Length: 259
Ligand code: SF4
Image 1 (cartoon, protein in one colour):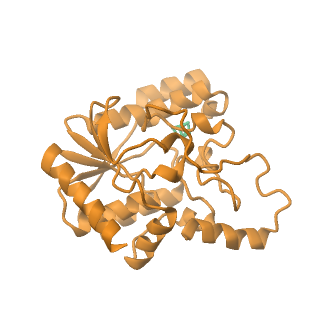
Image 2 (cartoon, rainbow, N blue to C red):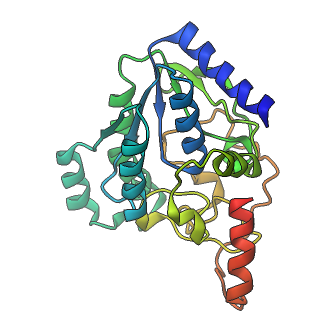
C-alpha cells in the first residue's frame, strides 16, 4: 500500500511540475476522497472542484459540507447554467432522462459536461479518480494522456488501484466518505440515476441501470476505444434483489463495497 500511495503522490507532483495549473474534479466518490486526502495531506497546490448537478443525493451534500470542514483545501462548486436547465426541462420534462439515451446524455451535458468545461477553463491538466476496473468503458485509460476532448492533459493516478485498495486507504486514514456506500451504492451520481446493487453485480450496475453498459458514461470521461471491454463481469441488472435473502445480501454487498 505504501508503494501505491507514493506512486499516486509522485504522479500528482509530476502533474504540478509539468502542467500547472492543475485541477482535481472531485466527484466525492470513494476514490476521489482518497485523492482529496492525499492532496490535502501533501499540501499539493491542486485546485479542487465538484459539480453540483442539482439532482445529487442528500448524502453527497452532507459529504460536501464535511470536506469543507475537514480539509484546508477549498472545494469550489460549479452549477449548471440555469437557463439551459430550464430549456431542458421544458423540452423533456423534469425526469426526461429516462426516455432515451439521447435525452439522458443531453441532461448530463447540461448538468455536468458544460459546467466541467467551465471548471477546466484556463487549466493545463486535470486529475480524476478513475480506476481501470470500474467499467467496461474504462479499460483502455492511461495514467497520463492528452485529453483531446477537453484539450488538456488528464491524470488518473488511481488507475491501477482496486476497490480493496481504496477502502483500505479510507479506513487506515479515517477519510470521510459518502454514507450511501454503506447502503450498497459503490458508484454514486445523481439521485434519480443511481440505485443500490446486489452482490455479484458490476460496481457500476446501479448507474443508469436501464441502459446498455456500453453507453454508461455521462460525457465527462470520453474514451477513445469504448469497444474494448475490461474483465469486469458485467451482469444483467434487471432482477435487482428479487428472491434475495435480504439480510445475507446486505452483509455480502457491504463486504464487496467496503473491501
Ligand atoms: S446523471 Fe441523470 S440527473 Fe444527473 S445529469 Fe445525468 S441524466 Fe441528468
